[in-house]
Length: 275
Image (cartoon, rainbow, N blue to C red; front, top):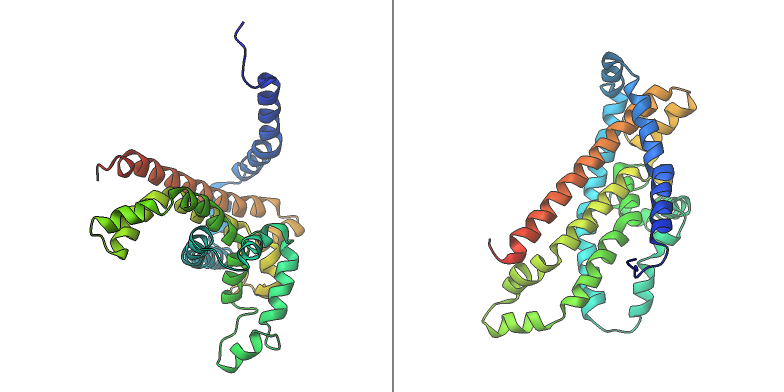
């Protein structure tokens, strides 16, 4: 009888599959089943309504803006934490995980208080004509705050494992700083970087607690998809709620497929140096 390294593998696998089915697959199947019961005409009316289209546009555009910010700032922050030693580094490293530990509603209230017109940051910005609270800019800021740890925590370990030897080797061969960054460092961290950005975008799409406090929730202006879905549930319009949620689920699934395809291409070709 073949012995396994991990005892109780069958029990562990069964528990994992049961948990996955009950917590993840069952709700998704229920959502898809509810949405499939809607006729094509009714589904089109729900999704093509001006309020739904506006909510999707605001959510996707602000999630994309937050992801762009996180991609740049998160990459720089991961670089600093991985490559430099300075006083307070451990405190800064711990602060990266604050959005994970902090309830999103608390984060939304704090951001609203800071960036309101009479807030610490909002008042100076208001004097130069920049409004953050109750605008799409506030939505993007709340999304970026809650999702930036995904980029930092996926890229930072890869940078730490990469070490500085590759940079020194590239410099000894005559490469400048930009060539070292673009042709040596970035290809090595690209799969992790892409995964972090994808998780950041997905988290931003589904963010609710941090956004509703700073967004103002004005229909056709600052209303997000998660809030619109919640409103339809409160109105007992389960068909509309299921239809809207299904569209966001499909968008996340397509994004996941695209991310996996790009990562597979990178590992197959770029990792072997074929292109």
